[in-house]
Length: 195
Ligand code: GLV
Ligand code: MN
Image (cartoon, rainbow, N blue to C red; front, side, top):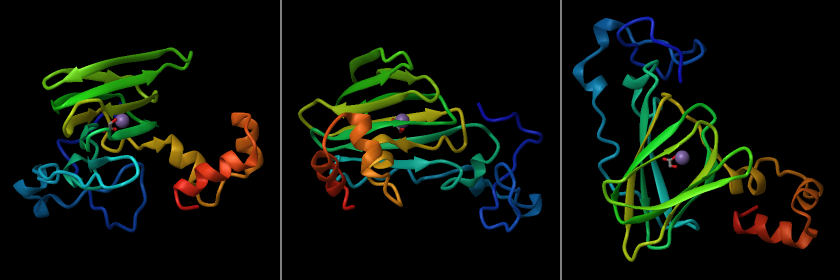
């Protein structure tokens, strides 16, 4: 859902001092075939963290050749029981294919209807733009999915981190009221994320 391109390509100059909506293009004379290939999704992500999952992004920031083309991909690795926690992408619809293992994939509509299914290798899913979603490894071993986005920089608002690990922190009064719990519950959750 990014705007249409105005030229064949515009390999990002990520270091430009000029700020535009997207990134300025590298001069044509400096563009090589290497700008259109990326091997950053080839390695298994390190899932040793509280969630037991790791998103390895292949957005314009890692793969500058994607600049202005309205597309990008991620690799998501899961330890057994690992969760890619509830999050949303403000700028893209997401589609994914399970490569390995067994994943519970779920999203919630803006009417608070929950849609979910357990998927295995070769099966696809789609998450409509902006909706909150997650993937949980419900298989015995590791799991892997490759996801694709119709934006070169989909962005991700990860709910637990947005709400409980922001800088500076959201005042407890907001969170106690929002979740209808006492301070101690909010402090306990915040402490899990080191704040
Ligand atoms: C999975 O939900 C991803 O954002 O790659
Ligand atoms: Mn996602």
